[in-house]
Length: 344
Ligand SMILES: NC(=O)c1ccc[n+]([C@@H]2O[C@H](COP(=O)([O-])OP(=O)(O)OC[C@H]3O[C@@H](n4cnc5c(N)ncnc54)[C@H](OP(=O)(O)O)[C@@H]3O)[C@@H](O)[C@H]2O)c1
Image (tube, rainbow, N blue to C red; front, side, top):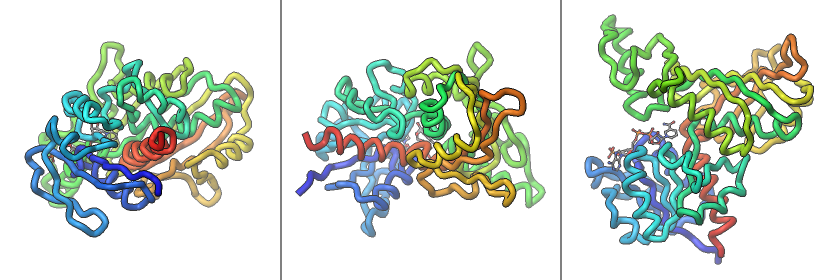
């Protein structure tokens, strides 16, 4: 009989954590026991898992050892990972971390299984594997097959990011503001999750600004892309929050070292893992956030050659940020880790 694992989900009742639990029920994961963890605020509440109520436990330094955890999926914020991931590693677990805390540490692999699965083997360095930023994951999935064929030099990306990227309270802020709008009570002064009113607005700022004029979110896309693809690709990002609940969209302009043909590129992308082509402009068929919710694929459309340069291609991609951009990628890393390392 193949081995089964004790799995902890840290941040189990958050936007990403809930999605991880849902995916673990949908797929055939070799699970012995699931242990949902959150703060003392949630300890004692429960989550439904495979038709049973499972109590949420408080995250402590001892809980990983007490529960004999072998795989710990963290999504409770960077400071929580910084404080508790070492205890999980010490207890013998592999940590798969959804926060930005460990991503740029040279010793820690940053993995998108469709792009750099081989880096999972570096988990032994520290016991930790980092999950990239939601916007980076879907982009590198789509860039990888094109880079292999045409040698990618540069990508210019503009994002249209959903409110769920900011967690549950950020989604609630959009819903509340829309309710206020319909009640003629929308008050621009009342916003916490975003720097401005998000309802009926778009905000060209995600996270804080850095000295170079880019935001932290934009620089994550720059730095994480080169680390995952292990290549000095030039990346310039403009990250924008839009009033949708789920699904990040991205407009990409890619410059290659060789000429690129849109029809050939479409064919290549259609064969790549976990990409789905939605590209029939004559039928108004293209990817949109509303059609990618709860899906585990990245959708690609509007693939077209540049009007001026034969080595430039444009396209529009969309993925569910809570799934592809977080939970699905984390679970795929866990699956791959089990395949590569777990049986040893
Ligand atoms: N949303 C996305 O698209 C996305 C994508 C990739 C990565 N991430 C990252 O994943 C993390 C979680 O994001 P989210 O969107 O799921 O946030 P969220 O909806 O706000 O959920 C946060 C979760 O963390 C728990 N938590 C907070 N403080 C804690 C503490 N001190 N100890 C234990 N648990 C604590 C919360 O439990 P309580 O209810 O008990 O406080 C809750 O379960 C963040 O680091 C985020 O950057 C998010």
